[in-house]
Length: 318
Image (tube, rainbow, N blue to C red; front, side, top):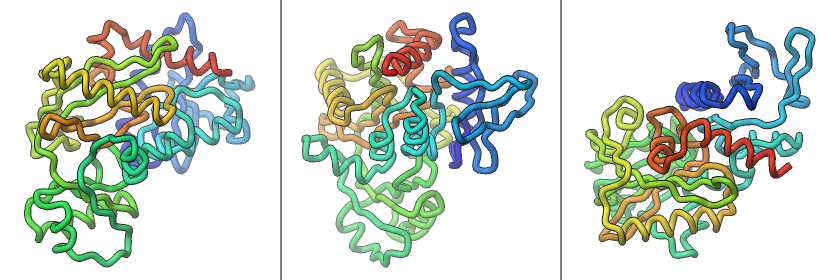
């Protein structure tokens, strides 16, 4: 848990919830904090022991501990963009998230949408910018219209995202996005019902969880709406059976097309009754209040079952 991005605090919350709910009768559990300046195993009395990065082990009281499995609870880099996955795979340590390639692809919104478009997956009209690129606000608005969303291409938890209503606000929104990433994606506004669809491998079967409808009190589903209670998250979503079947089918297709493993939570907006993909999260929040655990609860899956299943699946691959 932890990480190198603005999402580290949310990751610590997720990690602590996973640690709390994993069965202590089945597993010996350890909290590992990954930060730029230190990788440490944190004991129950808050003592820190450094992780040996050569083999991802830790020595506590002269006993060397080598982990059988890693539950990846790092949102953002390096846990959601492929770096931790590649490192653990080189060390042959099972982990609960998707593979390195899938993580890198889904973390890059531009590349993900470009990969899925040939399969008929609908998404918003978009315009791309890299740090240092000259840009013309009239050209951008001519393509995506107003209002539009300006997003950091590789960031989560709504960091670096702005909803732009006036053309004069575009340069500042781009500057905000560039504080989080050196790539920017600017998307047309999709007016419709927003839903979040969790897909997991549960007991060896790809399972679509009950859908969550997101109703933000703010202008969009921003950081406050996600984490400070400024939204309603309604599970199951108040949508027609036809809409539910349509978005379930697409979310499962995305999981299968990308050859995903572990958890995924895909965000969609229905435009004219058709689901349009916004993004795919591969290390979604796992606190008691987070969307995917809410969905699992409605499906009759408890947190110990949800987390334990992920570990058992990871171990079964070895």
